[in-house]
Image (spheres, rainbow, N blue to C red):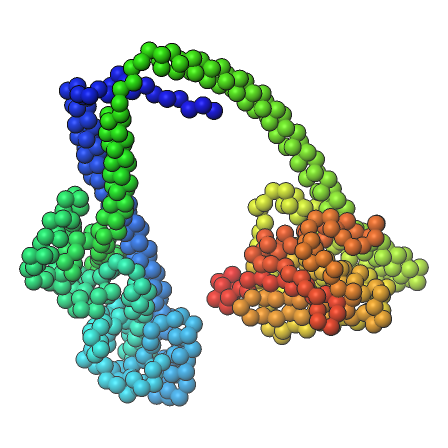
Length: 585
């Protein structure tokens, strides 16, 4: 395409007119105004964004602290009613009391638990070095004696920090026999905040810092902690250059302008305060301003270049350029017509491709239904034959068991058809904690009719303890059955067919199915739909593709490799369910 050439002979003369110089000055003034407005606008916008993020973080920190306090506040009430602790205080037998408190601490996650008798002496504790210490003059013991409710106490620790505890009096037949003291682990929040770039401080009702990421602030009034000596001239100059950006400095910490954000903690008048530096805001604004200044500089340079060009006012050049423009317009019209035709053809092709994709999906779904229902139908045929034989032998009770299995298979076929709908539309699956060991047992039970027709050795090695994962039980069993069927088919030509099933639990739950068959010839295309090495009529090549999709939906992965001694190994790795999550479920 021939480029358009702008005629500049009318604006560039040996002596530029006054209005052209005024236009350049107006352009420079507009550029300065735009840069100034951009600076003010972006500073306010980024400052507001930073403040909103700080508010969200403070709300999150407040929720964590309140959750820890509320969770621990219930423990003294429960332990104060523990018959074993009351009996120990009445009889003076504390041989197993400390171990009981240690067990309770491990279950609730408290910082410490101490049992005091009516004189304030520690008779049992999770920290055995504290046994025998006298707490008769300390706040948590004195306040617990005076109140019938659980009392919260804040006290300074010998190491310079603060200790937080809940205490409650233990009574037996209306008489005070002791006090239970449960420490609250709030220092872990200090350690988690230490990795962030902002400073965080929690103050009590007297504005005294009790938790903070700055150790030198701890124990001081927050206003006094922020006070510092007058800044040096260099620092004052730094502040002047910072203030031009319209930063609203809420406070100065360490000689830098910072944004102060406060929030209330609904507990004993506590407040949480964060200090976020404006340095990141200034960097973002400066980056945008640098791009704007560079753009205006390029435009200004281009303007001066255009103003310095020589005037070209020959009439012949005008006519020549007019002719070129007419030719260019004709070419553009032809190209526009061709583009419109290409766009119409493209729209028709897109509709054709979309229809072909729909037909392909329908074909794959019908093949998948045929593949997945083949095994339950074969099993039902076997159970019906067995039931007929049992009825002929006058054994109706055992025949009823076969009918029950047929009913289960019908339910399973219904579940499979419901599962196959999810291959086209994600979502709607209900996951629950599932023991992989039981899924392996169920899969082997489903494969029992096929195993009876073959002389094959099955070795199963599973842990004695449950291996829990979050999964859909039916779909997980479907994966295991597919792997077992492939292993059985692979060992048809083996002299001594052998299939190993190994289940291990570590960072993940790993289920390995190994056979001593002919191995895998093409690992790259193994999980592709409709890829199969079986003879026509024995499979359509969808089992491994569907199994791989199910495992991905469960958050794991399905891999395959050839074993060193021959045969193939398929491994299913799924995220293991942690012990705490299992207990919650």
